Each structure stands twice: as C-alpha cells, then as structure tokens.
Length: 407
Image (cartoon, rainbow, N blue to C red; front, side):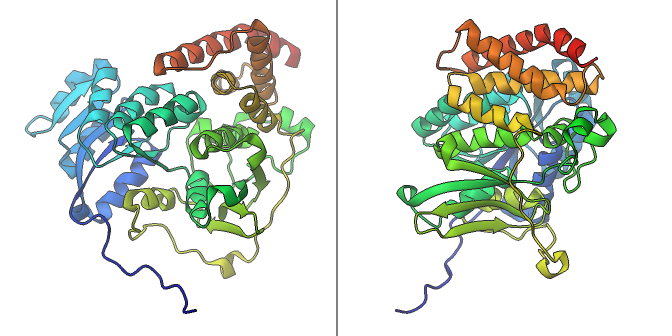
C-alpha cells in the first residue's frame, strides 16, 4: 500500500472571506486583528464591536475599512460618531447594536465578547448559519445544550478558538466518535502549582496575577491560579463535543506546549502542540478548513528540552472538582458555577475575601441553589441570563458569611 499523501489541493475558500470580530478591542480581538492584518487581501471586515474603548475601536474600523462598528456602552455613541467622522463606517451603541453587528452578513464571526453579555450576540451569528469561532466561555458554560442545539438547527459551524478546545478539535479529526475513549485537557497549573494548601489560602492578588506562561486579562489569570478556568474548560468540552464528564480528563503540564490530547480505542493518543500563543488556535479557526500562515513563533522542542506532566490535585484546587460536580448535576448548575465564581473573583480583587475563599463561595452557592430545588433545563438565552443573575444574587448574599469565616 502506498503512503497516504498530504493534502495537495487548492484552498477550499478561494476569494475574499468577510469577517466580523465581536470583542475586537480585547486580547482575543487583538490577536485576531493581527492575523487579518498580515494578509489583508484575504479578508473584508464586515463588523467590529468593543465594550467601551471607542478610540481603539474607531482606529481598527478605519484601518480595516469596516462597514459597521458598535460599542456596547450606549453612552459612548456620540463619541464613536465623532471618532468616525469623515468615514463611511456605520455605527451604533448598546446591546441591540452589538447584536446587529453579529447578525450582519459575514462568512466568519469571532465571538470574543466576555461574560454573559456575549451570549445573545453569538446566538445572532449562529442563527445566520455562519461559521462562528467561539472564544466566549459563557455561551457553553451558561447555555451549552441550548446553544449547540440552536447551532445545529441553523446549520452553523462552531469552531473552538480556545487553545485547549481547538487542540481537541484538531486531534479528534484522527478518529471517529465511536472510537473515542477520552479527551485530555492540559493545564499549566498556574502560579500556585507547587504551593501548599495553607499558602494558597493566603495568596495575594499580586501573586495570583503572576502566571508563568500566558499573558491574559485579570479575571482569567486569577481563574488559572485557582484552576477554575480548567473547570470551565471541562464544562465547555462536554457541551462542545457532546462528551460525558467521565470522558474528560485534566492533566497538569507546566510548559503549556501540549494543549490537548485525544485517546482512541486502540490506545493511540493524538496531541496538538504549539507555543503558548493564542494566535495559533485563532489562525486555525480563521483559515479552516485550510491552514493560513501563522504569526506565532515556531515551536523549538530542542530548546524547551523537556515536557512534564502531573495529575491534578482536587484537594488543593477544589474549583476543578466543583466543575465536574456541576456538570453531573446539570439543569443550569454550570451556569451557577460560573456566576458564583465571577462574584467570588470580584470579591477577591476587592480584597473582601481570601484567595482560598473563592472556591468555598462557589461551593456554598451551588449547594444552596440545589437545596432550593430550582433546577430546570434552560430553553432560551433569557433563561440562561435570568439564572446567571439569580446565581450572582445568591452568591452576593452568601459572601459576608464566607468572608467572616476566613477572618
């Protein structure tokens, strides 16, 4: 039998691809625009959105000749219009304008608006049946079943833009679903990987923000330190790839070079490797099903020298265990997990609770919500958003007693 050749065909997507970037002024947006900037002849920017950075949004709109831009803060509309004066760029402000941007006719949409605010815009893109590169955790954590069902009904293609889920997406192509044994999501372990539990309990904000490998925003960096981010990724993987909790493992890998692995029935394990640079998974999504020239550094394994792996510690990092618990509970529990964590992280940043209390607040919120007996399947974006708010209120109510226990 002759060897299987590498694909040697013309790109599947000839011509110019129209793209929209929701969250263009954030870190994922920056990486996406950097890739588009490298090959401007391949892309036409349809729409861009930002939260409140009007100057940055207007600068991008002018550079990429965007057709429409929207700022999430409705009070900034006048400022945005002034910044775009003399251009042909249409603009709007507020939630409805951001949803309009998402619904505009683009071949490819980057959904990178953080938080629950990103759910309705992402759904607007999904409902068009377009290709959506998903970098918003809340779409799956807060409304996973509903979101994926809606995508299937609309014929939308969901491409995972997170490094771990994109790695799994690439590795899963090596086999069939019935041949799958498990997927393995890797975790750096964060800054407290080797710390004792008592030291983690007392960790400061400055210490939590010293991630060893990735440069990220404040919230996700703290989530990495608590391993809550890995819990969120386990939940995402379950909904994204229709996996049970027992089919998802986590492996601590301090070098952040192997991003995800898939094990098949024959015990073959396929992994995706790359430098810790978000432009790699984004480039895969931007070019899919073809591959484009990336902007990240080439991987030099000889220079790195060694790759090491460890089992996760569910005792020192209880947030990871809680994610599995929430996933098994179902009926909105993952929404509660996410909302309570956001309240807890905000309280830690404000120095209202210790670092170790983050997981305790999440656990108490989940337990209180389950005892109340309000679990029900989520059938709409409004259901998910309402439960998110309910969970935030519950976590805020429990916060004083959590803070008092730690004092």
